[in-house]
Image (cartoon, rainbow, N blue to C red; front, side, top):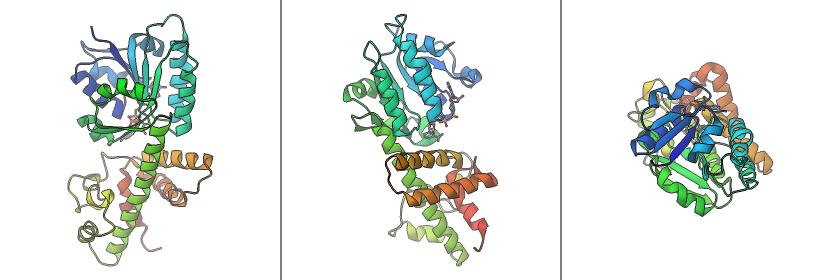
Length: 306
Ligand code: NAD
C-alpha cells in the first residue's frame, strides 16, 4: 500500500489540490476543522483523520493549505511538531510542506521548531500562485523555500498539483518572500490599470479601446492583457461575471497586510503598497470584500469626480 499524503485545510484551494493528488494515485488522509468540507472527497483512497496527531503519525508527507499565519502557527507549533516529537510516532511524517500564504517570519519560526525534533523532518514553505483555477487544473506555480534535499523529495508531489516548481532559496521563508512580493506588485499593478481605465472612460475613451492601446504600449501588463478589470476588454475574466469567481479583494488585503508587516520588520518603505492597502480596505468596507480584486475598477469609477 503506498504511503499516505496528509492534507490539512481542505478549503477552496486545498480541496482541489487533494482531488488532483488522488487523481494521480496518491492515498490521502484529510483534516479540516470543518469536517464537512472534505466529505465529498472521501473514498477508497481518501480518508479523513480524526485528529492532527493521527495524521502526523500515519502520513509520510504532510501538506498544509490554511487561511492565515495564525492558523499555520497553531497547526504546526501546537499540534504537528509536538505530535512528531512523541515517541509514539517514530515513523510519522518525514516532510511537511506549507503552501498557505504567510509572512516569512512565520515560515522561519516553524522551520526552527522542526530543528528541535529528535529525528530529521524536512520543512518547506511553498506558497502558490494561480488561484482556484490553477488549483483545479493542476497548473499552480509553487514558490519554494528550504533545503534542496527536502525539495527533491517534494517535487514529484508538487508536480501533481502544479506546472512550475521554483526554488526561491535554501533559507526557510524564501517562498513566502517571493509570494508576498509578487502579490504586493500585483495589487499595485491592478490598481494602476483600474485608475487608467477609469480616467480614460471619464475623459471619453471606452475601456476596451484604451485597453487595446495599453496592450501594445508601455503600460501593458498581466492586469491589462490577461486579467483586465473592465467588462468587455478581455474574455472570460471576473470583470465579465460581475467580479465573481476570482481572487477576492479580502485575500488581496490579507497579502498586502503581510507585505506591510514584512516591510515594517525590514524597515523598508513601501508607500505604493500602503496606498493600495488603504484602497482595498475601503473597498472591503463598501461591500466589495468577496468580489474579485479587479472590482477596484468599478469601485474607482463609481467614486465619480473627486
Ligand atoms: P479557505 O478559507 O477556502 O480554506 C482554508 C481551510 O482551512 C478551511 O476549510 C478551514 O476550515 C481550514 N482551517 C482553518 N483553520 C484550520 C485549522 N486550525 N486546522 C485545520 N483546518 C483549518 O482558503 P483558501 O482560499 O483555500 O486559501 C488557503 C491559502 O491559500 C491561504 O493562505 C490563501 O492566502 C492562499 N491562496 C489562496 C488563493 C485563492 O485564490 N483562494 C490563491 C493563492 C493562495
